[in-house]
Length: 384
Image (cartoon, rainbow, N blue to C red; front, top):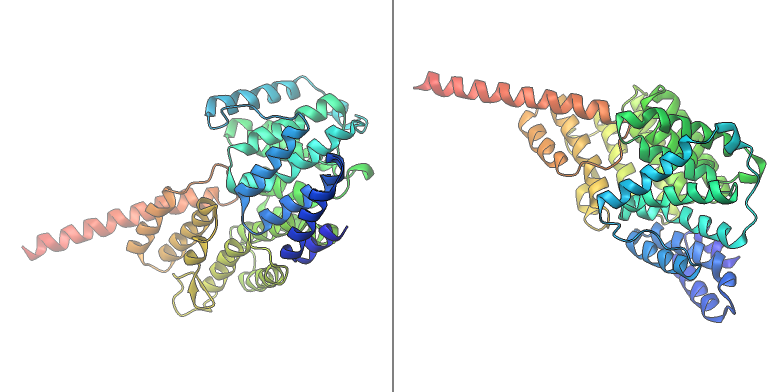
């Protein structure tokens, strides 16, 4: 449709006008389904995550699908996740993989819409992610396989993998997701599945180098299928994994520069600034900048771009991590300690490929700060 074409081309103003016209003139809710899906994707691509979520939840209610109340209550979310985890524990993997495709048309749209709310919730209201993935898994178990079921198992696997105790189950769910995404009747979501599987689960089990290559493949697959935002998510994860796994930094910086140029060309903002962070990080480490401890793009500090986005926590987390890393490596321990303090204020809810280096460099910076303090005290004592 024209709405979907406008989304792929990044012509969001035209998309919004077409969407309003279709929604106003459609005779029933089913006629609006594809428009709502594209509209939510469009709004989230522009960084308006909470707006996209509000529209999605409103449409879901029209289909009789309501998520649990009190979603700001950790206990409610935990109970919901534990219930879904218990359901999965009772099932054999082969039983899941052999399920027939779901036939209920209304449930198909519900799962499709829930799938489109994954990115906005991850970037805007992360406490929604566990509930959305849980509900998608529950609907799969109750009604059969949906096109988005592979995404559901991948994301739920990432949710349970947030704790070390959940890695085994999460890794098992990632295998289910990778098997489902290969089925001919569930194609089209490889980019989403790979982002969750290799960016949030398998990076703790398999070599990061393998994860990086998987993200590169998923980026190209996402662009080919029109899944632009998750293609960009994989571009970001290429930067995250590549800077932690010993990749050639010059090649990595060049690759990320190409990704960032494509994001600008397609007018998608969600992952542009954080991917620029890793491009600058790699460029600084190979000596291409005057001050290797700064993160600036086009002469402008990247932190100033982040204030314009709704999800500052995720972006600042990456900014402060990379700057504290650079400051330590280049011997500016006072700046490293300052960045470390800022980093601790914006720790993400999901574990990521940087985890080992985050812990390692926080410890090194603490030791360097203690050493500098001891030297300063010794100098003061000597002066007396």
